[in-house]
Length: 386
Image (cartoon, rainbow, N blue to C red):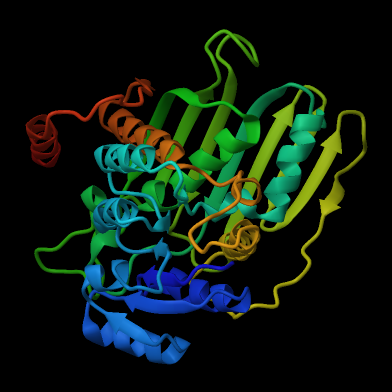
């Protein structure tokens, strides 16, 4: 039986998510926005009966059993933890920091019977589902190199907000790079142990962001990851991954993920999958674009849009398998990243940021206990000072 849904957020993702949920048979009973005006306007547009700017009103709504959280990263942890604490299933975006992610992991471990997943929709994109299957079947042989290129226009909002602030989770590395880090780990079945990165902010002010305000979030990022256990995989350092993110390019969004191995390569361009084995003359189309029949969305890249649609379908299959609204089946959403995966991804993101400041390779060490908050404050103040 499908649960009633409460949605947190009024941005582009929420605007797409609600119609997709409704199309799959979910009833969206409540919507939260940062202001009554935002929430009321979108609720009226999407036919949602209840709206509010008070988070508890959604969490305590009697008909809400599944909470979808798509809000600024600094707010994600508090609502996700509270939702789990009162028995709600949770699908949410990434948190702002590794400490926030660790708190979410702790909450999820207390309530293992509840659904708690991070909504990285790329894992559900059919092209990447097929790529992972082919990698497991040995299409490319032993995986040696992963190369990712994502280019597109600016990620900044029109007015000054969290997308402009690096410490609030803004920037290409946190917004898009985190999904790539998670995807690569999912595809090749191993995690990064060392990283090296470079971040830059080329657009620091604009017509609407001026005066004393400056953008601190990155709009260009290049980083490398060594994945797998040191001494295994390709050579002595595991799988080598390079990722380039550039959000200073107007025009069409470019999203390319290539995996190269000892026997060939696979490459996902947009929503299509191509492959080429060693000794063959050219690429073969392994999975084409079946076309998009949902709402037109300008602010969401096609791979993320198609992946979101597939994730909602998987959620329907998961909850339909049980008669009780809170119960869910693990198999349909088994590929979804857990909160533990979210903590790993955020740890890699912060290691890349450290590397950009130090100019050195940095180790990826996932925290096992919450650090002293005063120590984190001192580090943040020192970063701003430098």
